[in-house]
Length: 124
Image (cartoon, one colour):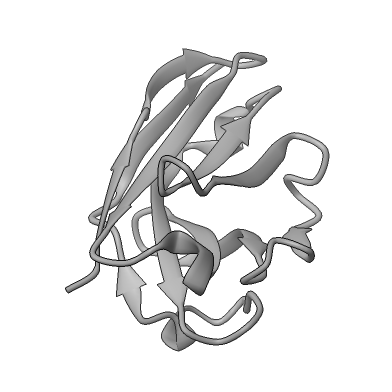
């Protein structure tokens, strides 16, 4: 049974930084493509960043490119999201997800395992 638990969320002022961590148990994270998504009330879950199974291919959507970066720590079996230069519009519940496919996708329905979500609030 694969389980994901996010940590590292919280409140920060605009321009600040946070690092979200997603701990994976049950199987090695290197076996999966991974993605970070976010969701605000009344909106669909939105893809933010992704990493292919071997981490050779990563993606960040335009709105976060250069500010949010996905990276893996295979030794700790975690997937992390480094968040810099945060803006109020980054406020959301953030989710990590794993997929058995070889590379990331922007489609949430293609991911097999999900964390419970963690709140990030950026104040102006």
